[in-house]
Length: 421
Image 1 (tube, rainbow, N blue to C red):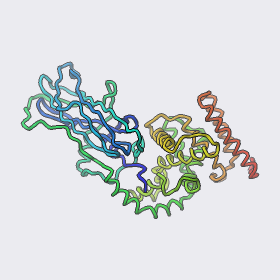
Image 2 (image 1 turned 90 degrees about the vertical axis):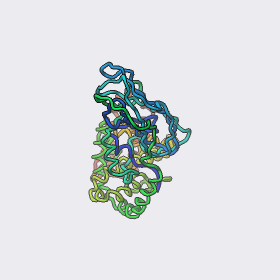
Image 3 (image 1 turned 120 degrees about the horizontal axis):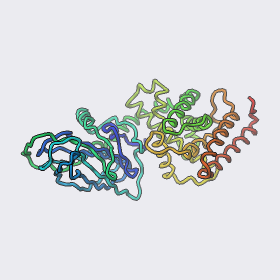
Image 4 (image 1 turned 180 degrees about the horizontal axis):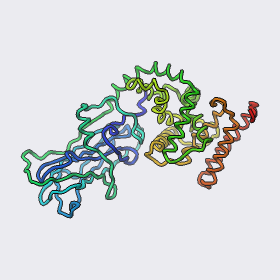
């Protein structure tokens, strides 16, 4: 089983996330949320790598010179700037000790600012999507600790030129600290070594998952995918024309049926959606009893597979240069992030390759009672409306689309499929 995606640890602990240069997720909080003069508290920076290579980080922490009331602010930290190398795929927590000192006065909602800069390696492989990935089944920390960290209320508020911002309160009083000054420390929450245990359990489900995948009802699959596709694209800010939704659904159904085994260079058992199915069978078996709920849970990974499969199909059919495998994988990740609301969704994402590849399988994948000519008519209607708004910016996209529509029309004529059936 591949290591196509690692679990989203940060998503279990933080309400929000900031994505830095498409290689790091982070969120920021303080604990405890209130202190007194002389008593240390901690700034807590959650860090989650999205790539398989070590990631160099430059981190800084500071408070403004005055609090929100205009009083002088003096918060000591032993290392306001530090460097950290985050191992590939790891999620961890950086503890930064801070101590309010005089002339700081009691106050509320005092900002603490953190800046995160990354040094990207030259070559790397994405191991988590921009949207975060699946939830973890095993964490390297206790359930009690998870509850404590969730109570921190990690956020990803960005202020003052890209700084993460958390706030704390200073209560009245002055309690001198008796211990030694704490030092910054990094705590691993999840490392790639934890993945082996998870994968072993998921791998054991592969034979059962394969039997289940082969027996999926195509008609039900198509109906659920069509409805959910319209829903997720609409929620992402780009409502689909019915013709667009039909052909996107054809490609998704093909990718979840036998398409991955029919196209050169792909295999069902190596796909993301099949791996996700194994994980769900291992860690959330009741979901398999509800096919609609299951398909919706598999949808982001099925979409990723469909984009990569579709790019291959369009490139082979039209001989267009659609990038290498790494570029195609990144493009697929961007589309998944977009439909999950973590990146902008564009018309290019809809047509290349989703609609286009759906046209290629117009005969292989059909809905119950569908006349493919009528589906093409609906797509032509969608095309006319889109091209009038898109102008020249998507001219190449629509040229490819026209080529594929004409190809499908010839195929339907050759197969003597009548328009008025």
